[in-house]
Image (cartoon, rainbow, N blue to C red; front, side, top):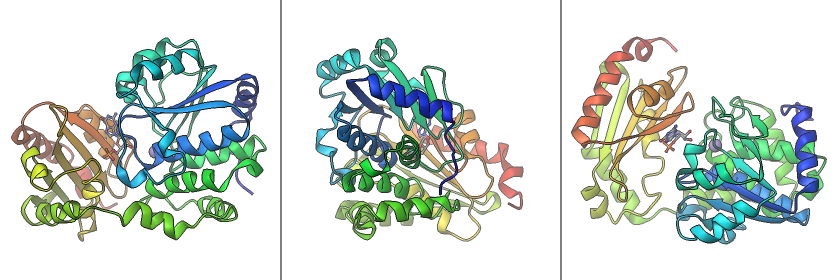
Length: 346
Ligand code: 5GP
Ligand code: MN
């Protein structure tokens, strides 16, 4: 049995909204990751069994290693089909906002979602949920939005309506947001949920291979390059930095998603508890900042104070508008500012 994480009033509310709704649109954040796509498609497959007219819209494209997911081909990419997507959003009865906490995280879709007369509900696990939804299901203590979607469907009394396809999507989101159950994954109920998903016939080993073992040759070579040439270790701060320019990414035939997970690698070094990856974006004129930490070091505070960003305690990010040298200098200043916490025991 699962603990009742989601408040009963929220469950009752969702039940009523879903019952009355004909057209439901699911939206998730810019540069969607495994949990964004997994939670969206998990809910999508469930709502399809309820005979709803349901669409998933995300702001921009998502990485190739998620394209095998059942339903991925039906996802509408907003920046390619803006007019069509705007119409769906304006005509929706309910908009489900998954895996993000504030409207700015949906980028160019923000305005239409804000202006749509649809009822809006949030299912999310980021800190500090904004106040833009009639129902806010926000649980930062839960490691993935996909897990919350599973919990919500069960609480609605619809476990039996989770199909194998839906279970595959939910599992993918749970797996990717915990790095294959290697962090944020000590809650024993996660494993109860996995066993329930296995009962739907998912092949978890195949899902792992589909997501983690289908990289391009360019990615692997770029990984070697970045670790050998572009990593600076700050032993005195228990921290490490890696960085990549546009030029370097082009040299390795960079494709979206190729650098996914790079930021985690320095944390596999003994004694390193804070890692930063700075990547010049190949499309927008900015530097994408990814931060990871272990234990109690709050990398979301670094993201917020130095890089216009935010996120979770151990995984956060932001954006920097300026040169790579400036971004590196800023990171070094962050290390000095957070020195005490970086050197703290746990
Ligand atoms: P990643 O490093 O994988 O891009 O992002 C990790 C986490 O950091 C995301 O799940 C999200 O919570 C947060 N994050 C990443 N980029 C941004 C950003 O630009 N702004 C904010 N507020 N959060 C971000
Ligand atoms: Mn997530």
